[in-house]
Length: 302
Image (tube, rainbow, N blue to C red; front, side, top):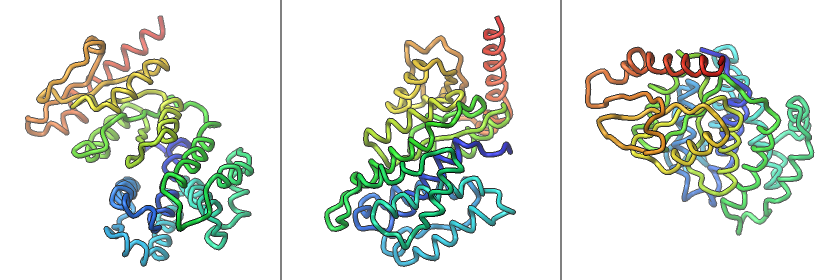
């Protein structure tokens, strides 16, 4: 497995910290199930090997133990395999502790140190944290998430474009959530790419800006076109407009067609056949991806 990239670590680590901090508050209750599910997906992705509570009350009551368990996974598990996620996690979590005026839940000196080590101005924390209302009795989820997502975008903007990182444009639903670790990640890894995807459960304009920044910082886009999900199509269009390489992937047993992309190279799969997932990763899908990448390299060499 390739080493996790700065983009992967900053985005995912900070999002885990943000979701972890928020999920225990009353204003997050309505979206608790969505946030809990996305956190669990990511914890599974990094082999955390523990389950988050599925009720808001239990998450809140067990929060201290859960926080300790997450820190163990980020800093100590498997000799620190996930250590790259620790600083961004601390910044996402600590940003909200500052924003909600809960200084006992973070270490301000550590936050400033981590910002400096990441070549970021520590003043960014206070700049965006100051935009969050302090009245927990009246605060809404958007009041907190909007500044947090802008802050996260600021963490990502200084990073270089990662030519070997591929952004996966996919629906936030099953079976595609299962496909990310089972199909997309191994297929990309076999072809020399690290993979990154956005976190679901968010829909405001600041999340959109952050998502587009992820595409900007990625070298290419793998787009799951099955079902013609509107978000995926938008992300494909944005990537084309930014002159990113876009690789389409779709289920031929559920045919859909975009007239303007019909002639572009794509990786087909047939979910009605036996062992079709293995065929994507180790068979025709892998061969097709290698051919697409070789053709692109030859074109660039001309």
